[in-house]
Each structure stands twice: as structure tokens, then as C-alpha cells.
Image (cartoon, rainbow, N blue to C red; front, side, top):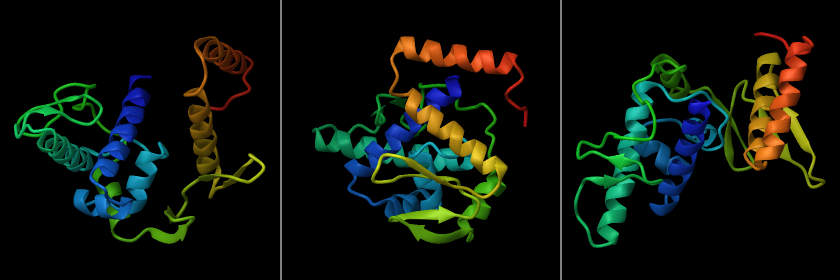
Length: 192
């Protein structure tokens, strides 16, 4: 569960840093040398953790934001805290906030392939990528899920579940975990 907490924290820090710098997703993505679609998915918790190479670029961006924040507050030290309070070493690497040396699920090749042109369209001001699952709020508060394939459908449902679970209290989270265990025991879930 720690990796989900790390993903939520990274998402929050990315959004905060980008907004503090006054950058659009496209401009921030360009600075990090990643695609705007990938940045959007990271900020919305709809992708795997970044590759080691992408993580280094993101950490560099977060360090830049932290330095600009320190300058704005009268300190020109390059060491300090990145957005979200994670300490940053003078070299720009995060020195806290989770194990960043663990292997990532997404390979460097995947991140590069995305940068070279899988982007197909702009939907509602955000980049959409082939096979990307999208959950859009309609006016009635219902969710419209448009997905390419069973894997995308499952990923969309998991993201929706995680999004809602972040707003639940401890008792409700306990109940949700209990229901999930019950379904698992009854064989109503599938392993993929």
C-alpha cells in the first residue's frame, strides 16, 4: 500500500509545483522531457509509477520548484524541501518520502515510446492516449467510462475506487476492505 501513498504524494507535489511555477501541463511536461499525456495521467493517478529515468526528471523539476519557492521567501540555498515537505539534497535527489530505489513497473522504453507519438487526440483540454481509460463526470454526477479493452476497464474501475476511497473515513475504509476480502473469499474476483 506504500506505493499507492507514494503515487498520491507524487501526484499532489507535481500539481502543486506546476501551479506554483505558473506552468500549463504542456509546459511542465516539456521541462521534464515527458509527454503532456503522461504528466496528466500522473497528476490524475491513472498510470503506473514513473520509470527511473522519468523519476529523475520529475525530481529535478520538483527541486527547481523548491528552489524558486526558497528564493521567493528570501532564501537562496539549494538544499531544502521539495513541494510537499520531502527533503531535497543539494544534488536535487529526494532524501525522504519513500523508497525511490525500488524497481518501477514502467520501463524506460515505455516512457520513451509514449513521448514519440502515441498521443491521438485532445479530450476536454487534456491529452488522450491510445488505450487510455477515461472516467468523465457527466452533468448528472454519473461516470462515463470509455475504455479500450478489459485491462483498461479494470484499471479505470480501480482508479475510480481509489479516488473515492481517498475521501472515506476510517470506518468506511474498514468496511470497504471487509467487502473486498469477502468478495475475494467467495471467488468473485479474478486474478490477471
